[in-house]
Image (cartoon, rainbow, N blue to C red; front, top):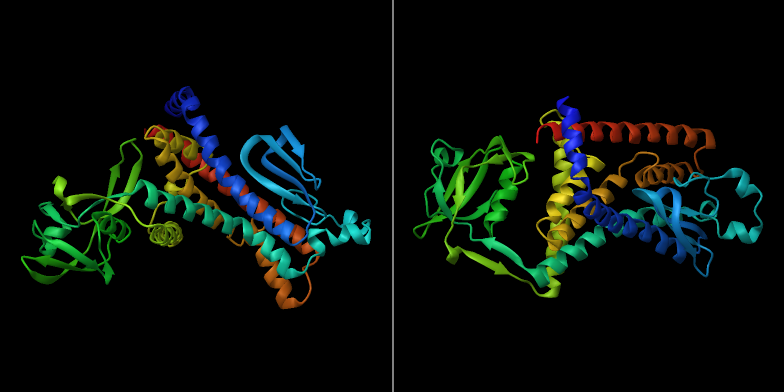
Length: 381
């Protein structure tokens, strides 16, 4: 009954989540498929369909090269269908390919050289990364980054920081050799270092000291009630207005910072997945469409720029997930192409069919697991 009540409550606020969710997902999916589309056109592949969403068409139009651009009813992804594809997963349609004229085969995706096919496939995830870099760079250049100087205002009694010898007024210069410019830099390193000893250099009254500290893991709630598990040292940032700055960057520096931010999201995601696989982290943070919709609505309440930032983070995540070597995903196609490059010929249709079925089963299992996590998460709010 508690789960049913939570779902009903969530459904009541669904409309406030729906528009932000559709905006974020549509932007991310569009650029992913646009990456496939642009490189396919460069490689002279005939593109039959460019679809945002699955299922029946809401509306669409044909461009001058015959591609059907369409918006479909199920807004949980999208696809680009090439000449010679049997379905949206780009499984080759052998009967169709055998019945093509030479001119038609020249425009078929599956008749293209291996390098061209690989370029078309990898272009989707790369487009996601480029979109994220562009959004982050825009934020750094035109919105700015609010930073707190890395000065310790207070130390929590009994914390890892107190045990390591931190004092109020210490200015943190580096952690494990990584330069620290703001309090956010400290949080990012410490949050993923629970149970790991860190070497931290601080300035104290003109002297530089090396302190050893091991963050502890703590479960906290964010402003929206979502559970967050992270490493903590037990230090508090300065509340003085003199220690807060809004920093903007020139375009080139902003672009570099955008690349760094994208790399951070990738590395943080891979680190979390490694922790889950190794059994050191719980998989309950893996979310599906319901969680994305909920977070989109929460972030939208903070303003459009916050929602844009979420789109960048989600774009990185979708690009990364699509590179996993699972048939049905872009990474699965790249795996097949790598095997083809080694063998000198493609895998048999039967082997590819088995691979696609296994991939579909894995994707469906992941979706069910993520959705179950979403529903359990609703009961805890």
